[in-house]
Length: 434
Ligand SMILES: [Zn+2]
Image (cartoon, rainbow, N blue to C red):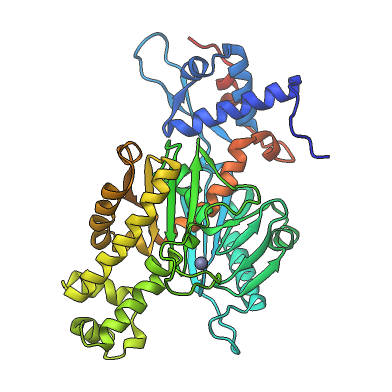
């Protein structure tokens, strides 16, 4: 039987305290003094000094100068050790792979985005064998290119589908045409480091929470429009998985009972009304009916070649049919957001992917719908904002997956062999505190 509660022996207490101190150092986003950490944690000076020395020995924190002479003797300042190791984030998208390597402060060391091969028989489906081969090639290249930057903690992978969190199996990715793929175990054995696989919108939401526009925000909803429409739900500072880990499939909320048929089998799903596919299809019709001449010119007279970038260009040129279609999208977006806001009472709704680019054309209408439909109490404190990372939100989220795991319990991520620590640095943590 899986243990539901862990009892609090001394080892557990130490683990908790190491975790708390590391999170304080991380959360500060700038060098922090030991005296301040004593104040924040409520632990005594000696304990804080010992715990910090341990975190330093494992390579998670480092000394970073001396505090100013505000009061008392100057003290040593601490920060996350950027050189403590590397993190790899990967997004397996529909038609592309994106890889980023960062240091422990999540600063980019290396990144690459490539198109993936399609299945020759079914061009809309990504051949898993080929994509996996490309993925492994790219990750090895990333590892080699950054080899000199310290140990590799792990690889976080965002995928456009349902993931079993316990096993790391990608259960179903409709837009890739993949089913039941044990990605975590496969890559852990190939790369010899921990691999975390997560739904792309969830990964992106975590990235915004740890590194982007939703830092320190405990209640928010992330909406991600790639090929489909996904969502990540944060409640009380935690990503919500629901009973099976599949919570957040907001793209399949029914918004129009008799609306267009969705890939999932339902009709009138939100994704069918505000997703990029829906936007392109709506404007393809407008072009065919001769209502959007500037868009017709941008797609070189071929309505089947319309892409989101043409639509955004036409919108920037003020094409009335395009602006009106995007306003309709804003209307449906606002209706769905009003429902989410009433149910979850978030303080932030973050729009990612294509939605973040189309923001200026759809947000005013979405806001209007939200204001007229959501309850006064729930809509009062909510803001709709655009993602910090736009199309890179998921790959940044991949980095955040491993980072979150480290911050949740640094003890589990200690190096197998102790790292050499310069004597003077080691002294800095346990020396006297003013
Ligand atoms: Zn659906």
